[in-house]
Image (cartoon, rainbow, N blue to C red):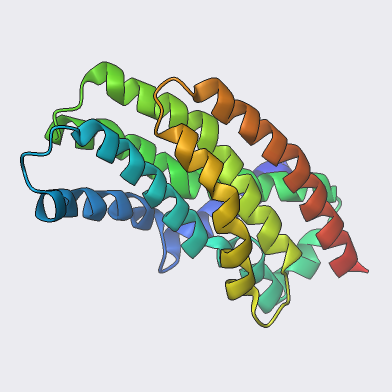
Length: 209
């Protein structure tokens, strides 16, 4: 029950913060609006551009909200309270992963079919894109959250996180643009989940000591 309450707490904070649920979807919408102005209205391969910009919007959404994962609780002292509860650190980290993924990736997944209609993307192509996002976006959240925990308390955490995370996102963006790479993305997410859980738990235990 405490695990569930922790997820609900983080989701409420995400909803009422200045960077709420609308931020993730607005990134995708604004990027897609700019496509005709940059590439013109006669671009024949809108589908490829569409898929690429979706992954870019996911990366930007996660990067710009990483402070909400651990740093906000660290700065206001709530992280000490959370760690001192009876919840194992592993469950605390996993709850952070889940809430951050829901807040940043679910809005984009909801917008994809609607945006696909505007850009004349077929239903099957939209479903393939959603499948890829469902398979790969958790891995991106895992990586971002782990690096956020690793740089917890650092004065230049924002710079360090960006430098470390962006190269690690490249495989997800490359395979995400391919409609038939959902299994590869799922494998990348599973690998990222294992390593990220270990790094995050280790970092929080160091902080607790």
